[in-house]
Image (cartoon, rainbow, N blue to C red; front, side, top):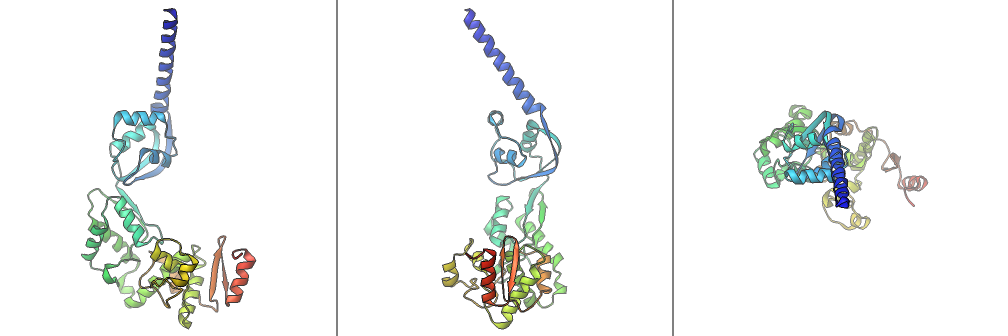
Length: 316
């Protein structure tokens, strides 16, 4: 009997200690955040949320969420954390659907496919709904076959719950029109060609100092009838990096190793700064370039180009 009593007391002591640890770590311990936003999309879990908030997702969290339910099918939206929060307060904020809206971020250079996927993940419309909405929007720039590639301006947008797909698309396209007022570009065909080139430049180099130079290389090639030979154009069509053999054999109109001139559409959505780099392109005698370890090298001849690639270690 005495052994049973001792075992019982040990059990009670352990139980109390575990509960104290739970209460302290879950309700009392707080972490401070300064304007940290957590974006919840379809399929987001509390494990991912904790990772975004730099918290360990442990057994205590799992048990609590299992007991309280609502740990899946979380409401899509952006949740702002500013101040000190316990784990309990974080979970309750999300379970109470205390969001500031739905945040859609379109990074610079994103393709139409990527934009569509992000809009769908945020519950703002699927591909069919997006295409239908775009057909109803009057837009002053070329968009043959309802293809708006290049016009989804890279920016962060906040939408309230209940925003329609058409309102979402109008907001994005209106942002583009703010950056590129139609009256400023009366020659829409020329504008579209420059937008195509800007999208290629955006995909090729990230350093703003290199963009006018790279634009100049491509314009020089177009001027003398050379192929652009940009890996980025076929990558756009394939949705992945093109293999060397594919660059030689793929007959896609987006393969600039096989087809002269610009592709039929932009290959992404560049920011206004890259478009301006095309407008102010630095055209020299350079016809070749490559980027290696963050630096871009330029050459006038193919022989010089190969030599620099070997000297830098880019070509083995």
